[in-house]
Length: 168
Image (cartoon, rainbow, N blue to C red):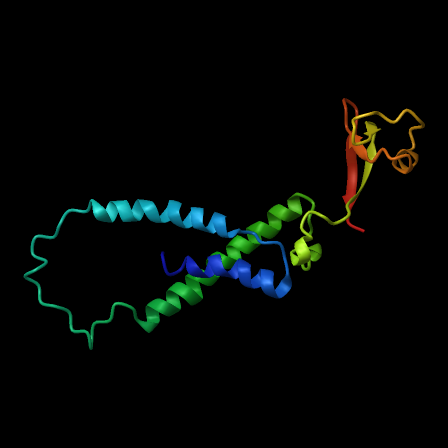
């Protein structure tokens, strides 16, 4: 587990550097995940009962018996690690898509702190336009005229809803 979790944790940073997508996991979040998931096994090993004959057993032959083998490294990093990283990225992309960020707009959003600063055009029905002080636009029902007058925030109120949203 400890070996295989390294690949899914480093992959978001590599993708962030190469493709400039937003970071799915921040360094603090990775630290929290590591501390949270590694504490339980560490505590269970600390409270494990001792083996009665551990000192009577012969030492392992270091030329023959390896603790870390090529098969273990291949399985942990290349198989399990890649499967975990792929599953994590797939889930991340699906969730972002569900929240209105399609996969085709993700490359480049991580560069220059662009995340959350891209334009989103939404067609709304009902509701009312407000300015930054909370004042309601009193003119026509034309949202474009309200935006030109400085009322750039939309309040759904009781009867408003978002029809569709697209990235320009």
